[in-house]
Image 1 (spheres, rainbow, N blue to C red):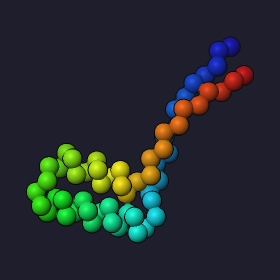
Image 2 (image 1 turned 90 degrees about the horizontal axis):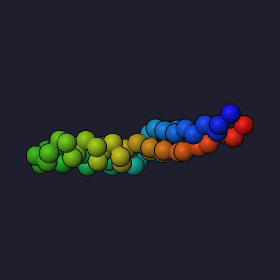
Image 3 (image 1 turned 60 degrees about the vertical axis):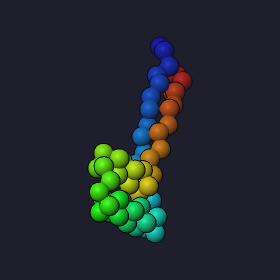
Length: 59
């Protein structure tokens, strides 16, 4: 058998103060007429903790 490689993506919300600051910053940017395609991914990257891990299972 060959070793399997995989990717694990963990998405979870950050602590409340950081999430509130990120949400407020995103709302302010939208209110100031910033492009939605830039504001939403940036806000989500602040509010959510995204971890991408590669792993290999050896048999």
